[in-house]
Image 1 (cartoon, rainbow, N blue to C red):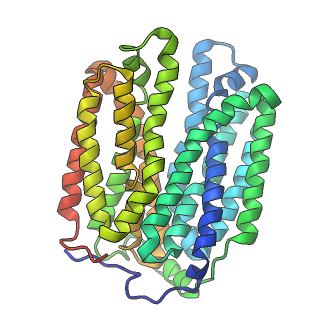
Image 2: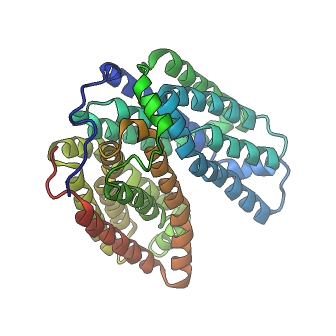
Image 3: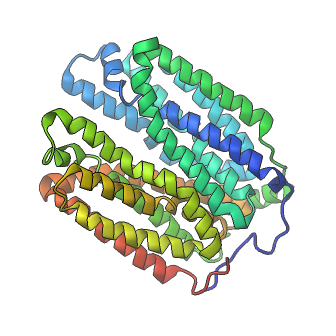
Length: 409
């Protein structure tokens, strides 16, 4: 199979002259918006109670609904925003997302009841998507020989936002209050809106706009196998990362005292993300040099092997170390997934197909905890690790089967 590389023979677009500055703005903007989306995790149940929900079971239920609403909505609209970005410009989508999130998150600090909070979380998912939009912009503008490195750097910023957000959410409310925390977060995202509006440069492409309007994004892809593989892999990656979440506290309780369970569980959850933050840009740079498919297959195989000892650990530190190493292995996958899609679709369809990729990742993010909780509760916690191992191994074999026989990187 030969790989169609839509940017290999084409001359550099004028917009690529600004790619480094755009990457910096997108990195900062993605970090701040992800922080704002995740900082409510530590105090969400307290805020739900403050909004009038008193029953403990109802507080837990409404907290879950409010948190998941954003990702549920975002999964549906990501392809739409991607296609509109292809037609009207990717910068415009970032402006829309940052302004929408500024309004939504600020209004969360003024919510009068839990229904309003859930509605605003839904609106955040519908109107937001700054980080995913940044992926599209960076993928489209970065020179091909630096694309995986740039996307890896951006991925590191997004994952860092996921780590830092809950920490800030735990520290700020005692100082400025829960409502003040939302208002401050909205103000920070407004600064992202200003930076995006005035500092990001994107040259208008009339040819791309006409091509995006004239054709169906999916139909315009000559060889769909690599793209289908990357869509499947995005879902699989998030499923693998999230499958352990529902069982981690119960699993850790087997080898630590009750007083330390929550703290150690938090460290275990953070270890994989920290590993990915440290490795994503390096693995992206490596992929630019030796080939995206090679890094993808190696990362999947190593992660699958690391899951086996996780099922048989006898101490928390063993689990923390193995989760960290698994994060290191998986850190380069998202940049490589995005780069492979970018190099296998025409420019006019980039946003639409990357939007589908983002939706598939959200599906994995939702399905992972559900599947992990079901398997852990009905079969056993070790089965979660071993089952995920099998899925990643199957993913590695599938990628080997559909990958080009020779990568011309």
